[in-house]
Image (cartoon, rainbow, N blue to C red; front, side):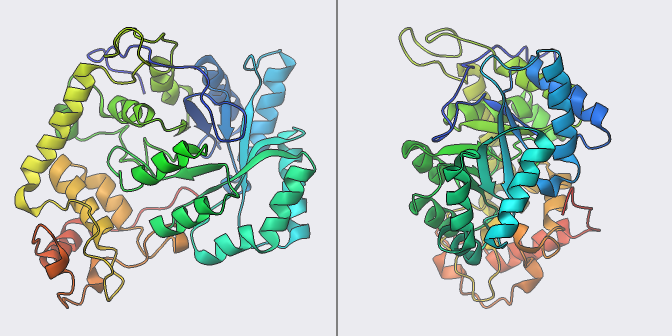
Length: 403
Protein backbone atom coordinates (compact mmCIF):
# COMPACT_ATOMS: atom_id res chain seq x y z
CA UNK A 1 0.00 0.00 0.00
CA UNK A 2 1.83 3.09 -1.27
CA UNK A 3 1.04 6.49 0.28
CA UNK A 4 -0.86 8.51 -2.32
CA UNK A 5 1.03 11.35 -3.95
CA UNK A 6 -1.74 13.82 -3.06
CA UNK A 7 -1.08 13.43 0.65
CA UNK A 8 2.73 13.69 0.87
CA UNK A 9 2.81 12.62 4.55
CA UNK A 10 5.41 14.43 6.62
CA UNK A 11 7.48 12.74 9.29
CA UNK A 12 5.97 13.23 12.73
CA UNK A 13 6.98 12.89 16.35
CA UNK A 14 8.60 9.48 15.93
CA UNK A 15 11.05 7.76 18.19
CA UNK A 16 10.71 5.50 21.22
CA UNK A 17 7.48 5.64 23.21
CA UNK A 18 6.83 4.47 26.73
CA UNK A 19 4.98 1.16 26.94
CA UNK A 20 4.03 0.50 30.53
CA UNK A 21 6.76 -0.99 32.68
CA UNK A 22 8.43 -2.59 29.67
CA UNK A 23 10.99 -1.35 27.21
CA UNK A 24 10.15 1.63 25.00
CA UNK A 25 8.54 0.78 21.67
CA UNK A 26 8.20 2.29 18.21
CA UNK A 27 4.99 4.13 17.26
CA UNK A 28 4.04 1.17 15.08
CA UNK A 29 4.07 -2.50 16.01
CA UNK A 30 4.43 -5.32 13.48
CA UNK A 31 1.59 -7.78 13.96
CA UNK A 32 2.57 -11.20 12.64
CA UNK A 33 -0.82 -12.78 12.02
CA UNK A 34 -0.84 -12.23 8.25
CA UNK A 35 2.60 -13.07 6.83
CA UNK A 36 2.02 -16.80 7.13
CA UNK A 37 2.40 -18.14 3.61
CA UNK A 38 6.07 -19.04 4.12
CA UNK A 39 9.14 -18.23 6.25
CA UNK A 40 10.42 -16.14 3.33
CA UNK A 41 7.30 -13.99 3.42
CA UNK A 42 7.74 -13.35 7.14
CA UNK A 43 11.40 -12.49 6.64
CA UNK A 44 10.62 -9.98 3.89
CA UNK A 45 8.03 -8.29 6.09
CA UNK A 46 10.40 -8.21 9.07
CA UNK A 47 13.09 -6.58 6.93
CA UNK A 48 10.60 -3.94 5.83
CA UNK A 49 9.57 -3.38 9.45
CA UNK A 50 13.18 -2.80 10.45
CA UNK A 51 13.60 -0.33 7.58
CA UNK A 52 10.44 1.47 8.72
CA UNK A 53 11.88 2.00 12.20
CA UNK A 54 9.72 -0.63 13.93
CA UNK A 55 11.21 -2.36 16.97
CA UNK A 56 8.09 -3.96 18.49
CA UNK A 57 6.81 -7.34 17.25
CA UNK A 58 3.50 -8.84 18.30
CA UNK A 59 2.78 -12.54 17.87
CA UNK A 60 0.97 -15.48 19.48
CA UNK A 61 0.76 -19.29 19.37
CA UNK A 62 -2.82 -18.84 18.11
CA UNK A 63 -1.44 -17.28 14.91
CA UNK A 64 -0.55 -20.64 13.40
CA UNK A 65 3.11 -20.80 12.31
CA UNK A 66 3.75 -17.10 13.07
CA UNK A 67 6.14 -17.65 15.97
CA UNK A 68 8.14 -20.29 14.13
CA UNK A 69 8.42 -18.14 11.01
CA UNK A 70 9.27 -15.08 13.07
CA UNK A 71 11.97 -16.96 14.95
CA UNK A 72 13.59 -17.98 11.66
CA UNK A 73 13.37 -14.42 10.33
CA UNK A 74 14.94 -12.99 13.49
CA UNK A 75 17.77 -15.51 13.20
CA UNK A 76 18.36 -14.63 9.54
CA UNK A 77 18.57 -10.91 10.26
CA UNK A 78 20.64 -11.55 13.36
CA UNK A 79 23.19 -13.48 11.33
CA UNK A 80 23.65 -10.33 9.27
CA UNK A 81 23.90 -8.15 12.36
CA UNK A 82 20.60 -6.46 11.50
CA UNK A 83 18.36 -5.38 14.36
CA UNK A 84 17.11 -2.15 15.93
CA UNK A 85 19.84 -0.22 17.72
CA UNK A 86 18.34 -1.02 21.11
CA UNK A 87 17.10 -4.50 20.19
CA UNK A 88 13.76 -6.04 19.32
CA UNK A 89 10.82 -5.84 21.70
CA UNK A 90 8.62 -8.93 21.42
CA UNK A 91 5.12 -9.46 22.77
CA UNK A 92 3.50 -12.89 22.71
CA UNK A 93 0.32 -14.12 24.29
CA UNK A 94 -1.26 -17.08 26.06
CA UNK A 95 -4.94 -17.95 25.99
CA UNK A 96 -6.55 -17.94 29.45
CA UNK A 97 -7.74 -21.09 31.16
CA UNK A 98 -4.73 -23.41 31.36
CA UNK A 99 -3.26 -24.79 34.58
CA UNK A 100 0.10 -23.64 35.89
CA UNK A 101 2.24 -26.44 34.48
CA UNK A 102 0.60 -26.28 31.07
CA UNK A 103 1.16 -22.54 31.01
CA UNK A 104 4.82 -22.97 31.89
CA UNK A 105 5.27 -25.43 29.03
CA UNK A 106 3.47 -23.10 26.65
CA UNK A 107 5.65 -20.14 27.59
CA UNK A 108 8.84 -22.16 27.23
CA UNK A 109 7.62 -23.33 23.82
CA UNK A 110 7.04 -19.71 22.77
CA UNK A 111 10.58 -18.78 23.75
CA UNK A 112 11.89 -21.84 21.91
CA UNK A 113 10.05 -21.05 18.68
CA UNK A 114 11.22 -17.44 18.79
CA UNK A 115 14.70 -18.48 19.98
CA UNK A 116 14.84 -15.66 22.53
CA UNK A 117 15.62 -15.83 26.26
CA UNK A 118 12.71 -13.60 27.33
CA UNK A 119 9.71 -11.62 26.12
CA UNK A 120 9.26 -7.90 26.50
CA UNK A 121 5.58 -8.50 27.25
CA UNK A 122 3.54 -11.61 27.97
CA UNK A 123 -0.16 -10.90 27.49
CA UNK A 124 -3.29 -12.80 28.38
CA UNK A 125 -4.75 -13.39 24.93
CA UNK A 126 -8.42 -12.49 24.94
CA UNK A 127 -9.35 -11.39 28.44
CA UNK A 128 -12.94 -11.21 27.25
CA UNK A 129 -15.04 -12.65 30.08
CA UNK A 130 -15.10 -12.34 33.88
CA UNK A 131 -13.78 -15.89 34.25
CA UNK A 132 -10.73 -14.90 32.20
CA UNK A 133 -10.00 -12.05 34.60
CA UNK A 134 -10.42 -14.38 37.57
CA UNK A 135 -7.98 -16.86 36.00
CA UNK A 136 -5.41 -14.13 35.41
CA UNK A 137 -5.61 -12.42 38.79
CA UNK A 138 -6.75 -15.04 41.30
CA UNK A 139 -6.45 -18.39 39.57
CA UNK A 140 -3.69 -20.41 37.89
CA UNK A 141 -2.98 -17.54 35.52
CA UNK A 142 -1.93 -15.34 38.42
CA UNK A 143 0.59 -17.96 39.48
CA UNK A 144 1.79 -18.33 35.89
CA UNK A 145 2.33 -14.61 35.35
CA UNK A 146 4.12 -14.24 38.68
CA UNK A 147 6.36 -17.22 37.88
CA UNK A 148 7.19 -15.87 34.41
CA UNK A 149 8.26 -12.54 35.83
CA UNK A 150 10.06 -14.09 38.77
CA UNK A 151 12.08 -16.30 36.45
CA UNK A 152 13.03 -13.32 34.30
CA UNK A 153 11.26 -14.76 31.28
CA UNK A 154 9.15 -11.62 30.70
CA UNK A 155 9.70 -7.95 31.44
CA UNK A 156 6.02 -7.13 32.00
CA UNK A 157 2.57 -8.71 31.77
CA UNK A 158 -0.47 -7.37 29.98
CA UNK A 159 -3.67 -8.44 28.29
CA UNK A 160 -5.63 -8.07 25.09
CA UNK A 161 -9.37 -7.67 25.32
CA UNK A 162 -12.38 -7.76 23.07
CA UNK A 163 -14.62 -7.63 26.14
CA UNK A 164 -16.91 -5.04 27.66
CA UNK A 165 -15.74 -1.66 28.88
CA UNK A 166 -16.62 -2.66 32.45
CA UNK A 167 -14.45 -5.76 32.20
CA UNK A 168 -11.51 -3.83 30.76
CA UNK A 169 -11.76 -1.22 33.50
CA UNK A 170 -11.90 -3.97 36.13
CA UNK A 171 -8.77 -5.58 34.68
CA UNK A 172 -6.88 -2.29 34.69
CA UNK A 173 -8.00 -1.56 38.25
CA UNK A 174 -6.38 -4.74 39.58
CA UNK A 175 -2.94 -3.16 39.20
CA UNK A 176 -1.64 -6.48 37.87
CA UNK A 177 -1.12 -5.38 34.27
CA UNK A 178 1.18 -2.71 32.90
CA UNK A 179 0.20 -3.08 29.24
CA UNK A 180 -3.01 -3.71 27.33
CA UNK A 181 -4.19 -4.09 23.74
CA UNK A 182 -7.58 -2.55 23.02
CA UNK A 183 -9.94 -1.80 20.17
CA UNK A 184 -9.54 1.95 20.08
CA UNK A 185 -9.87 3.47 16.63
CA UNK A 186 -10.78 6.65 14.79
CA UNK A 187 -14.15 5.10 13.92
CA UNK A 188 -14.65 3.46 17.31
CA UNK A 189 -13.74 5.82 20.14
CA UNK A 190 -15.87 4.15 22.82
CA UNK A 191 -12.75 2.93 24.65
CA UNK A 192 -10.71 6.08 24.15
CA UNK A 193 -11.44 7.37 27.66
CA UNK A 194 -10.35 4.02 29.10
CA UNK A 195 -7.15 4.15 27.05
CA UNK A 196 -6.39 7.68 28.23
CA UNK A 197 -6.91 6.69 31.86
CA UNK A 198 -4.62 3.70 31.41
CA UNK A 199 -1.92 5.86 29.84
CA UNK A 200 -2.23 8.40 32.65
CA UNK A 201 -1.68 5.55 35.11
CA UNK A 202 1.52 4.42 33.37
CA UNK A 203 -0.07 1.50 31.52
CA UNK A 204 0.98 0.99 27.91
CA UNK A 205 -1.79 0.85 25.32
CA UNK A 206 -1.56 -0.88 21.94
CA UNK A 207 -4.34 -0.15 19.45
CA UNK A 208 -5.47 -3.39 17.85
CA UNK A 209 -5.29 -3.28 14.05
CA UNK A 210 -6.41 0.29 13.26
CA UNK A 211 -6.17 -0.46 9.54
CA UNK A 212 -8.33 -3.61 9.44
CA UNK A 213 -10.46 -3.77 12.59
CA UNK A 214 -10.58 0.01 12.49
CA UNK A 215 -12.57 -0.04 9.25
CA UNK A 216 -10.68 -1.83 6.45
CA UNK A 217 -9.11 1.55 5.81
CA UNK A 218 -6.60 0.10 3.36
CA UNK A 219 -9.60 -0.27 0.99
CA UNK A 220 -11.58 2.92 1.66
CA UNK A 221 -14.85 3.50 -0.19
CA UNK A 222 -15.20 6.55 -2.47
CA UNK A 223 -17.20 8.52 0.12
CA UNK A 224 -14.48 8.08 2.71
CA UNK A 225 -11.73 9.06 0.31
CA UNK A 226 -13.61 12.19 -0.67
CA UNK A 227 -14.38 13.15 2.93
CA UNK A 228 -10.71 12.83 3.97
CA UNK A 229 -9.13 14.43 0.89
CA UNK A 230 -6.39 15.39 0.33
CA UNK A 231 -5.31 12.90 3.00
CA UNK A 232 -5.73 9.15 2.98
CA UNK A 233 -8.19 7.83 5.60
CA UNK A 234 -5.60 5.42 6.94
CA UNK A 235 -3.08 8.19 7.46
CA UNK A 236 -5.63 10.26 9.38
CA UNK A 237 -6.62 7.24 11.49
CA UNK A 238 -3.01 6.50 12.42
CA UNK A 239 -2.19 10.13 13.17
CA UNK A 240 -5.34 10.57 15.25
CA UNK A 241 -4.46 7.66 17.54
CA UNK A 242 -0.84 8.68 17.95
CA UNK A 243 -1.91 12.24 18.68
CA UNK A 244 -4.18 10.87 21.41
CA UNK A 245 -1.08 9.40 23.06
CA UNK A 246 -1.74 5.73 22.25
CA UNK A 247 1.58 3.98 22.85
CA UNK A 248 1.81 1.96 19.63
CA UNK A 249 -0.39 0.88 16.73
CA UNK A 250 -0.52 -2.71 15.54
CA UNK A 251 -0.01 -3.16 11.82
CA UNK A 252 -0.66 -6.67 10.54
CA UNK A 253 1.45 -6.65 7.38
CA UNK A 254 1.08 -9.35 4.73
CA UNK A 255 3.72 -7.89 2.43
CA UNK A 256 6.43 -5.22 2.74
CA UNK A 257 4.29 -2.61 1.00
CA UNK A 258 1.78 -2.76 3.84
CA UNK A 259 4.33 -0.91 5.98
CA UNK A 260 4.53 2.11 3.70
CA UNK A 261 2.44 4.35 5.93
CA UNK A 262 4.41 3.40 9.02
CA UNK A 263 7.63 4.35 7.26
CA UNK A 264 6.14 7.61 6.00
CA UNK A 265 4.54 8.76 9.24
CA UNK A 266 6.88 7.71 12.03
CA UNK A 267 10.04 9.60 11.08
CA UNK A 268 11.88 11.83 13.56
CA UNK A 269 10.70 15.36 14.32
CA UNK A 270 11.75 17.91 16.86
CA UNK A 271 9.37 19.84 19.10
CA UNK A 272 7.86 22.85 17.43
CA UNK A 273 8.68 21.63 13.92
CA UNK A 274 5.68 21.58 11.60
CA UNK A 275 2.46 19.64 12.19
CA UNK A 276 0.87 22.59 13.94
CA UNK A 277 3.16 22.72 16.98
CA UNK A 278 4.36 26.11 18.16
CA UNK A 279 8.00 26.59 19.06
CA UNK A 280 8.79 25.06 22.43
CA UNK A 281 5.68 22.84 22.47
CA UNK A 282 5.58 19.07 22.25
CA UNK A 283 5.35 17.90 18.62
CA UNK A 284 1.95 17.01 17.24
CA UNK A 285 1.04 14.14 14.99
CA UNK A 286 -1.66 16.22 13.25
CA UNK A 287 -1.18 19.36 11.20
CA UNK A 288 -3.91 22.03 11.14
CA UNK A 289 -4.92 20.78 7.70
CA UNK A 290 -5.24 17.22 8.99
CA UNK A 291 -7.32 18.36 11.96
CA UNK A 292 -9.58 20.23 9.57
CA UNK A 293 -9.92 17.07 7.45
CA UNK A 294 -11.00 15.11 10.54
CA UNK A 295 -13.61 17.75 11.28
CA UNK A 296 -14.91 17.59 7.70
CA UNK A 297 -15.03 13.80 7.95
CA UNK A 298 -17.14 13.92 11.10
CA UNK A 299 -19.42 16.58 9.64
CA UNK A 300 -19.97 14.55 6.46
CA UNK A 301 -21.02 11.53 8.50
CA UNK A 302 -23.41 13.60 10.57
CA UNK A 303 -24.87 15.10 7.43
CA UNK A 304 -25.62 11.76 5.77
CA UNK A 305 -27.10 10.25 8.93
CA UNK A 306 -29.12 13.28 9.92
CA UNK A 307 -31.48 12.70 12.82
CA UNK A 308 -30.81 8.94 12.67
CA UNK A 309 -27.21 9.19 13.88
CA UNK A 310 -26.44 7.17 17.01
CA UNK A 311 -24.19 9.24 19.28
CA UNK A 312 -22.81 6.13 21.05
CA UNK A 313 -23.71 7.45 24.50
CA UNK A 314 -24.85 3.97 25.62
CA UNK A 315 -27.78 5.40 27.56
CA UNK A 316 -30.00 2.79 25.86
CA UNK A 317 -28.36 -0.01 27.85
CA UNK A 318 -28.98 -2.43 29.39
CA UNK A 319 -31.25 -4.05 26.84
CA UNK A 320 -33.63 -6.64 28.36
CA UNK A 321 -32.78 -8.96 25.45
CA UNK A 322 -29.03 -8.25 25.71
CA UNK A 323 -28.92 -6.69 22.25
CA UNK A 324 -25.64 -4.75 21.86
CA UNK A 325 -27.51 -1.68 20.60
CA UNK A 326 -24.62 0.83 20.43
CA UNK A 327 -22.32 -1.53 18.56
CA UNK A 328 -24.97 -2.45 16.00
CA UNK A 329 -25.92 1.17 15.42
CA UNK A 330 -22.23 2.08 15.18
CA UNK A 331 -22.00 -0.28 12.21
CA UNK A 332 -25.05 1.40 10.71
CA UNK A 333 -23.42 4.80 11.28
CA UNK A 334 -20.38 3.64 9.30
CA UNK A 335 -22.37 2.15 6.43
CA UNK A 336 -24.75 5.08 6.01
CA UNK A 337 -22.54 7.92 7.19
CA UNK A 338 -19.24 7.00 5.56
CA UNK A 339 -20.02 4.44 2.86
CA UNK A 340 -18.22 1.70 4.82
CA UNK A 341 -20.73 -0.95 3.76
CA UNK A 342 -18.20 -3.74 3.18
CA UNK A 343 -16.61 -3.35 6.59
CA UNK A 344 -19.95 -3.03 8.38
CA UNK A 345 -21.23 -6.17 6.64
CA UNK A 346 -18.08 -8.07 7.55
CA UNK A 347 -18.36 -7.20 11.23
CA UNK A 348 -22.12 -7.67 11.39
CA UNK A 349 -21.95 -11.13 9.91
CA UNK A 350 -19.35 -12.26 12.43
CA UNK A 351 -21.88 -11.76 15.21
CA UNK A 352 -22.67 -15.08 16.87
CA UNK A 353 -19.90 -16.84 14.95
CA UNK A 354 -16.77 -15.77 16.83
CA UNK A 355 -17.46 -16.92 20.39
CA UNK A 356 -16.36 -14.46 23.06
CA UNK A 357 -14.22 -12.54 20.58
CA UNK A 358 -17.17 -10.57 19.24
CA UNK A 359 -20.84 -9.83 19.87
CA UNK A 360 -23.16 -12.80 20.18
CA UNK A 361 -26.57 -11.28 19.28
CA UNK A 362 -27.51 -9.30 16.19
CA UNK A 363 -30.48 -7.00 15.58
CA UNK A 364 -32.89 -9.91 15.12
CA UNK A 365 -32.80 -10.36 18.90
CA UNK A 366 -34.65 -7.06 19.38
CA UNK A 367 -38.08 -7.83 20.81
CA UNK A 368 -39.38 -4.28 20.31
CA UNK A 369 -40.07 -3.99 24.01
CA UNK A 370 -39.37 -0.26 23.86
CA UNK A 371 -37.28 -0.16 27.04
CA UNK A 372 -34.53 1.75 25.19
CA UNK A 373 -36.77 4.48 23.78
CA UNK A 374 -37.22 6.75 26.83
CA UNK A 375 -33.53 6.45 27.66
CA UNK A 376 -32.24 7.79 24.35
CA UNK A 377 -31.38 11.48 24.71
CA UNK A 378 -31.84 11.94 20.94
CA UNK A 379 -35.21 10.17 20.85
CA UNK A 380 -34.02 7.75 18.20
CA UNK A 381 -36.51 5.09 17.00
CA UNK A 382 -34.06 2.41 18.09
CA UNK A 383 -36.11 -0.73 17.23
CA UNK A 384 -36.72 0.62 13.72
CA UNK A 385 -33.04 1.49 13.30
CA UNK A 386 -32.02 -1.97 14.46
CA UNK A 387 -34.35 -3.55 11.91
CA UNK A 388 -32.89 -1.30 9.23
CA UNK A 389 -29.39 -2.30 10.32
CA UNK A 390 -30.21 -5.96 9.80
CA UNK A 391 -31.75 -5.29 6.38
CA UNK A 392 -28.69 -3.35 5.29
CA UNK A 393 -25.95 -5.58 6.67
CA UNK A 394 -27.13 -9.19 6.88
CA UNK A 395 -25.17 -11.16 4.29
CA UNK A 396 -23.17 -14.34 3.82
CA UNK A 397 -20.47 -14.50 6.56
CA UNK A 398 -16.79 -14.19 5.76
CA UNK A 399 -14.10 -16.48 7.09
CA UNK A 400 -12.22 -15.23 10.17
CA UNK A 401 -8.48 -14.65 9.84
CA UNK A 402 -7.66 -17.05 12.65
CA UNK A 403 -9.37 -19.08 15.35
